Amino acid sequence: MKKRRPELLTVNRLQSMMLQLIKKRNNENLSQKLKVIHSGIPVTLVPLDATATIPVTKEFFDIFKDNQLTYEAKYCYKSLVIAHDTTFNGQFLKRFSIWDAFNAGVAASSMNNFYRHDGENEFAEMKQNGIHSGHVQTGNQDPFCLVKGGTGRCEDGYTKEVSGPEGVRVLVAANAKPNRNLSDTLDRQFFTSLLDVLTKPQNSGRFNFSTRYSIDSRLVKSDWMTMVLH
Image 1 (cartoon, rainbow, N blue to C red):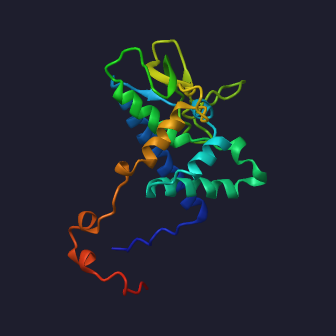
Image 2: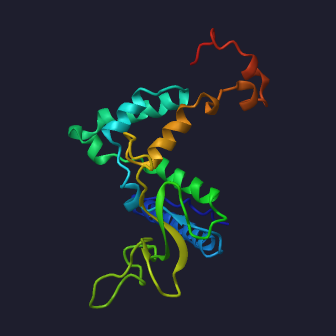
C-alpha cells in the first residue's frame, strides 16, 4: 500500500485554517452568550457611553496620591501614574476614564440591590431597555451580510436598543451618578466609594505562600533571600 505523503502547509492554507478556527470559536462564544442573555437571569449592561461619564479628574488624581494607605491603593495609583505618564501629548485627564472599576462597581451595586425592582444603583443612573446583538460576520462573503444592490447589513455583534420581541429586557447604565455630598471635592459618587474601599487597612489583603501554594511544600520552605533565579 502506498504511503500518503504529508500535506504541505502553504501560507494561504494556514491562513484559511486559522480563519475557520476563529469563525468556529466566534460562533461558539456568541451561542453561549445568547444562551445566558436569553436564560431569564437579571442582566446589567454597562456600555462605553456610561463609563465615559466618569473620567479621571485632577481632583481625584491628587486625592488618590495623598491616600495610598494600603498595598492595593499604591498598586492602583501607580498604575494610573503609568497611564498618565505614557498618554500622548498630556491628554490623560481628557481621555482616561475609570472604565473597568466603574463597571465592577455598578455590577456589585446591582447585585446588592437585586431585591429592588426599580433597578436602583448606587453609582449609575439606570434604565430598563430591550437590547439585541447583531449577527457576527463569519467572513468576507458571509451570505447573511451581503445585500444585492445595497449596503451590507451585518453589525458584527453590535448591541443596540430595540423595542420588538427579539429584544431582551435588561438594566442599562446611562451615566455615572454625581456625588451626593455637594461639599465634597470629588464629583462622582463612585470615586468616593472606590477610595474608601481601597484605603481602609481592614480591607487590605496579605499575601501568604502557605495558602496559595499549599500543594508544594518546597515553595513554602524555600529560602527566597538566597535563591538565584535562572
